[in-house]
Length: 104
Image (cartoon, helix red, strand yellow):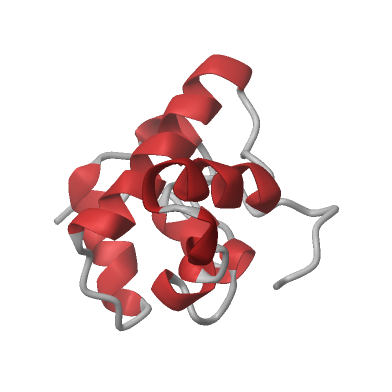
């Protein structure tokens, strides 16, 4: 697979270069096998980016998950992406690394 350019930390330089194959490759690099739940989160993140041109904050993703899976799903984001929202979810979703956020 021909990967588009990434920064020194492995994040896409241009989020519009993202596609499903890139997500699968980034997930493989993070030792994550993407499930329907992962794709649900990634699609929401990509839709938010398409509309707002910025990465969605983790609290909005958690709220979106809770709307589908219920209030008991608050930790689901961190179960799906155990090394953190920025480190894994944002990278796999093709976002630029959010500089102002913590790495958690």
